[in-house]
Length: 316
Ligand code: PMV
Image 1 (tube, rainbow, N blue to C red):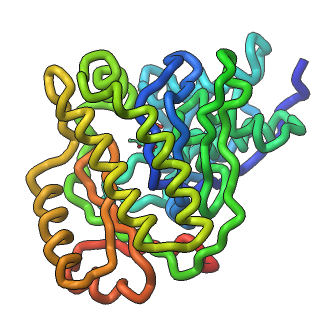
Image 2 (cartoon, protein in one colour):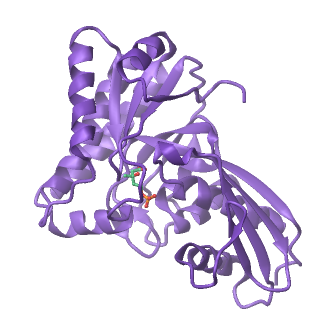
Image 3 (cartoon, rainbow, N blue to C red):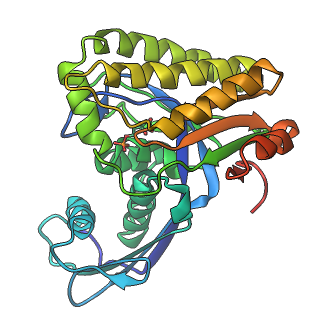
């Protein structure tokens, strides 16, 4: 029996994986085939407010969503995991600070903020590991969005998912930067869920991914802990391209990257050849994210004027 819900508000930052989660060993529980590691985007994220109400209402960016809206349905079904069959109508308001023009998905920060707000609203005194596990049920990458800074999501081995959650890394790296290069700001053609499942089911290259991704994750964690930028950048870029290679080999092929994404990569590789210290990573969309340090920020801006710079460790 849950207590009457209290008004609650929570913020969660979005995150970019430096070592990717790609492929599930359990689709219902969002259990991954490999561990992953991310950096949070500080003030780019989601705020969710929950208050008791007379009927269920889901609001997004100050707009009441119709009951048959797929996002509203997802949010309410997630809330049902907490309130189960108890009659506790809720007003759930979510707003994103992620610029629409950046074309970044917000399911990670959205489900992390929703999970934290529900935990608070129902006054559940849960350890972070459990909160991260709950967030995982909404979206895998949400496990890693409960904190600022770097976080590692451990794949775990248990069939019930009780050992599959994220924890923050105790690393502060004030010079660390992410630059988002928007390529395509429209909705993506295939959800990451569908893309993952299709790749696992049909790509002859997928077999090599889980072990490679697991060893990349550990090597990337070591590079983060040593603040070894070159090693981190090389590994993160190779990891992202290997993930996209599994998709290109899927049957039929799956390509989230657009010609302009490849142009950005070519420009980056040429600039790197000429000394620029920046590396790329891409997710289930066409946008390219660069990894760099503050000392390269001006050069990156000169080469990619459309880029948006994020300082994950600076004060808000
Ligand atoms: O959390 P999901 O189900 O949207 O999957 C995220 C998948 C990637 O963004 C491609 C990789 C990652 O680890 O975030």
